Length: 436
Image (cartoon, rainbow, N blue to C red; front, side, top):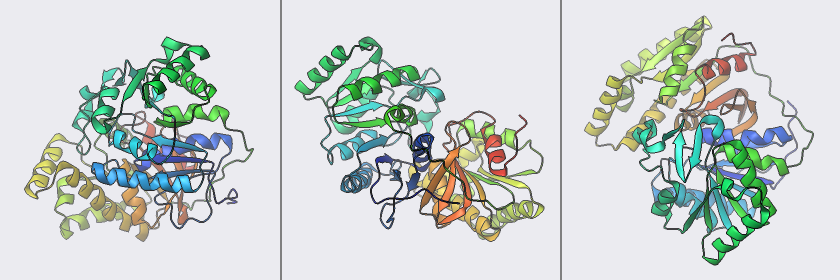
């Protein structure tokens, strides 16, 4: 493949706290013909893309580590002279959002942090400062029971104040309409009161478009903070380059999907994908990854290898059954692990288990579900990042691994997508049409 020309200074810098979110946000900018790369670490990359997304992998770290990782990324972007900086946050508010915004704001002299994590296309909305998923307050959804980063607070202003101590204002774009004078008055009043963090409601994409348009018109320097939803609306002011992203040629062969997420959405996607012909499922008990024994891991390896030798596509996934979840929780407690430590161990062991099979059988078409799992697998394969090429559907970017460009990879957040998203991703990688 002929790559776009690279340069030493990116135009746009994005700091994301996990891999799937990094790809989901960065892929927006491909529509403008920009070259986009997700990097696991900036050091050692001499020639950079137009848009660089740094995955700090900080969502499941403790607050001190998260601050240090994001601060380091911000220092690098400042040194590279990035003209636009975007802090990508989870649309379900997982991680240390307040701490990470603080880390970036302390490195740059922005007038405001414009915070709008809504992603209406994915059912994530913000109304009266409350974050909703499909109309349900966040703390009442499965995100409150997330094994690694449970979210117990749906009020975004309150959450940010708890995490950072920063004075934070709430603004509903609809209350100001398209009146530039009113917007300027509100922003001036916030500055006078020493309020630099602004939380915005967004029920629809029209709300996001309105706030971007008016904030840009006000000519303040801002740190944009949001999910992929807000990023999409920053594109209006980005000029077209006329370039098109091209994919590396990918060798023929089966697809392997590795799903470390226990989200209900992912469970449904796996069930549907396993109804396809020539598709094998390998269900891994997470408690066995916490106490890995060679005979058990060898059994899982044999199942994967047997399916690959037949030429079947393979879906390797942690069991989402309630009894398996309870067993893993008990095993982690017996080992003296916190839920976060147990979750990280499961991701690492799943990556180790699947990584050696991927390398041994030269599997070049991958689907990685769950940010921690995706990052762990990529690192096991020696990748330094992902050069983005396109999107299967909203929330499912794909690209070539940096360090092994023949490996095409789709990444997906565990709670993203429709019931048939995994099927669509398989067909995207195989270059065939999905009959669903």
